[in-house]
Image 1 (cartoon, rainbow, N blue to C red):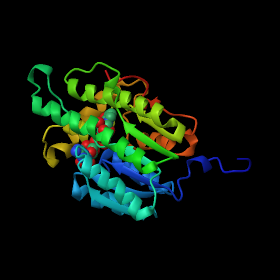
Image 2 (tube, rainbow, N blue to C red):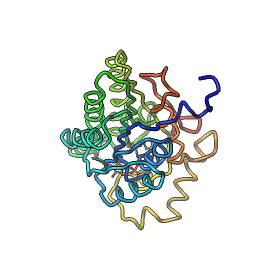
Image 3 (tube, rainbow, N blue to C red):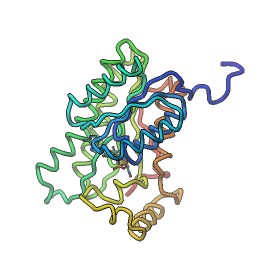
Image 4 (tube, rainbow, N blue to C red):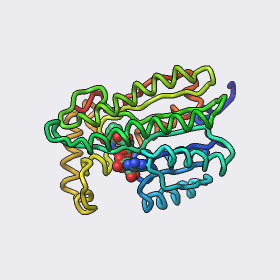
Length: 269
Ligand SMILES: NC(=O)c1ccc[n+]([C@@H]2O[C@H](COP(=O)([O-])OP(=O)(O)OC[C@H]3O[C@@H](n4cnc5c(N)ncnc54)[C@H](O)[C@@H]3O)[C@@H](O)[C@H]2O)c1
């Protein structure tokens, strides 16, 4: 430790990280940052076109990279993604379960099929990611980082299914963390407030690219976030990626079963 660079504990050189939801937003920013920290990356997402762009950026950062179309609601897909990491780079050190979907609907109008979809992606998807990672990490060490949300902690109208799925992620994180701690596999979660990504601007509905990229719409959403937030700023994907890097690396070696709250100082209500 003495004489080491202050950033040495954040160094991921020689390690392998799997990131789900890597085609867009927080997952993409995380993949690029982990690559810059030295890790080899295996990227999974349902959105194949976005995956290619993310993989190119990861490569530019100098990392080894593989990509696989992955639907995290399929246990077989998630197992295949983790197997790919082991086949390609010989090991799994970091599993970042970031893929997620948002539903924006009043409880009276929420259809059972939508509820099932939200739980399948946001909760079962993270469960499958934890299970596959724990199997691949064996006797450890390793780090699993799960993406929860401030919606797991703060009441937020029209997000009932989403909030329940994210509260499930927090409980799942704590349970798995306690189960695998002796193997030096750490399991932590992050509960961001609003972050400027396509998910927020799209509000989970099927929206066209034009609507997502509409500058007025985007500015209105960001202004509302800034107003709600004591720091007066909206979150960026990179803000959350930094929290993932901390939890993925030895800088957080004394932490497990915890939740970080990058949210500008308050829940987003
Ligand atoms: N943006 C926010 O304000 C915010 C706040 C709190 C938590 N989060 C969480 O952060 C995570 C990332 O969201 P984001 O804001 O970057 O949104 P995003 O829409 O930009 O990215 C989500 C990614 O997940 C992928 N995905 C969706 N369903 C999938 C599936 N079944 N299998 C594999 N991949 C799938 C999408 O294709 C997309 O690339 C999500 O879990 C989200 O709930 C976001």
